[in-house]
Length: 158
Image: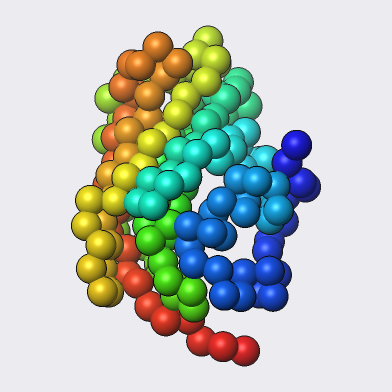
């Protein structure tokens, strides 16, 4: 059972590397971010260099053309991309997105019960990391794919 959405306190994150932080969120020890509730998705798997989110396309996510809005695809994929990078962070490190690209290859409706965004790190350097993600339907169909470049930095204390 997931706790209510929120933000982890700094004292909860102190001394944890990125993978431990993500695992604590998956285990329900840290709250999921509010965006997950807003857009009906959740973290379902983490490993070093990998993050998987599952989402449920809803009618409320539709654009005026009658399919799921590309922003929903993008948010789910961005979460998988960024969190895959997050799993590689040392304690006291952070990251931010420098560039993000999405390719939508198939329309999505609420007739598709669940999709998974699978993000995996393709490169991890000292200051820059890249990752790629795929958005797959319950039947394995590809709906979108994406890539990102992230800047890695030391977080300031206080």
